[in-house]
Image 1 (cartoon, rainbow, N blue to C red):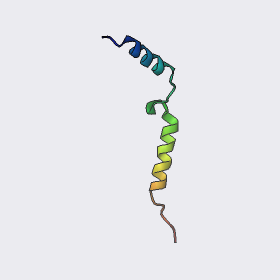
Image 2 (cartoon, rainbow, N blue to C red):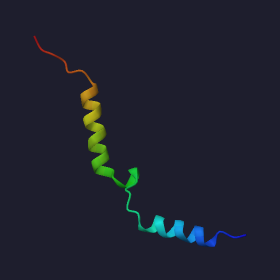
Image 3 (cartoon, rainbow, N blue to C red):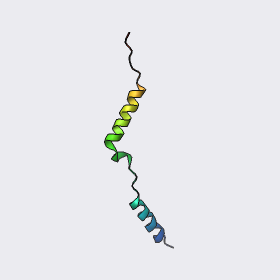
Length: 47
C-alpha cells in the first residue's frame, strides 16, 4: 500500500505555506535579541 496521495498533499501544503524560519529573519531577529540583552543588563546609576 502506497501513500502517494497523502505525500502529494503534504508536499503541496508545505509548498504553499509562508512561515518565516528563524534564520531568514536576520536583522529583525538581531535587533530583538539586542533589545532583550539591553533590558536584562542593569544600568549603572550615577550619584
